[in-house]
Amino acid sequence: MSLPASAPAQRTLVTGGSRSGKSRFAEGLMARAEAVTYVAPGPVPDPTTDAEWAARVAVHRDRRPSHWTTVETADVAAVLRRGDPAYLIDCLGTWVTAVVDGLGTWDVPLVEWQGDFDARLTELVDAWRSIPRVGVAVTNEVGWGLVSEHRSGRVFTDLLGQTNAAFAAASEDVVLMVAGRALYV
Image 1 (cartoon, one colour):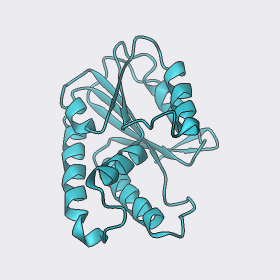
Image 2 (image 1 turned 30 degrees about the vertical axis):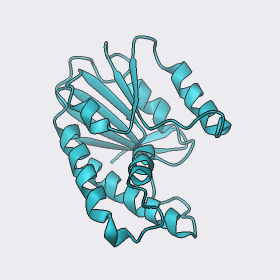
Image 3 (image 1 turned 30 degrees about the horizontal axis):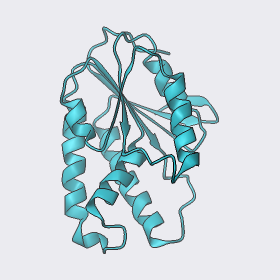
Image 4 (image 1 turned 90 degrees about the vertical axis):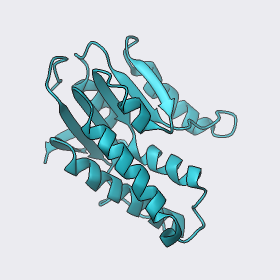
């Protein structure tokens, strides 16, 4: 399935586990759009310090159509407010990590900075709601995944779950990817 470039405002959240095919599916939804702004929440890790992550990013970059514009940024809301015709955000888990890294709060009690995170999430969801035509956001499904036993793993899972719920509420469609198959919710 792909969304036509002339589609009215349509926001779709694509979620699934690691290697579920969610990014490839999202790219397929946008395949016929003439102009797509691919937003990679960042910053993208330095390839000299995280070669495995850099290789994963390169695979995604290489398979995108050459006419798509790629923006790697921690300020996803600002990009969405530009009003481009179509957006693909991949992935909200990376956005959560970038926000928490930016707040410098992995080791600080959540109650001390939850309000700052909530404000940034509200800003992002408001920008998501304002996109003029088509948007697809990709995220990891945290409800079925393994949760790290350490504090930062639980914090990440909680914040991504909060982010996913906010995006699902602000989207017309939610698609769950399981083993490469799309299940419409």
